[in-house]
Image 1 (spheres, rainbow, N blue to C red):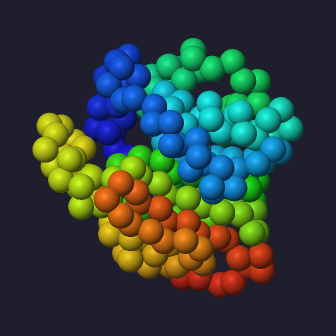
Image 2: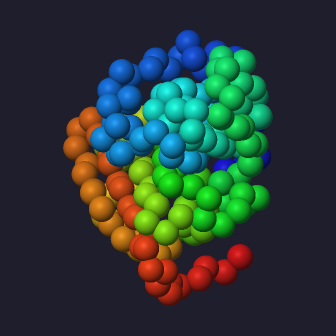
Length: 208
């Protein structure tokens, strides 16, 4: 994300939880994705913790959730609302993580991918921090056409943010080294699930 994105979401942080309601279906989506007890999970674009709390409950005390966001005020709201001691909060751009290689079982990007300025770099970085056999889910509760129209109707930096159609997302993920698992785009769901192969295969490196 850009500095402008960071400022945009920092300004919204105090009111965010009153503007965005928690959809009860999100918990079931996490179960469907396979989040289980003991998992280590990276929550990309965690914001005020809308998804993080569900993840922490699912992984239990033997697991760990790392909530990452570029907007420090959003993370402050998340910390204030949660008391899970197996959740850590990291203020960072997803494209420049300081986390170790191969440390996560699963990574989830919920309602964040359009705001990532360099999606290819982000996918390479996610690939790096996933364990072999680890899975990535890019999830939205609207399809790309609906979401892009919604963003275009807003003021500010997010008005130009675009979610690629799922076929394009598959191509981007493949370029980063991922294999496709489940790809589905319907009126109320964008589900792009990928896996890091157990045996590392070569892939085209992007220029930094």
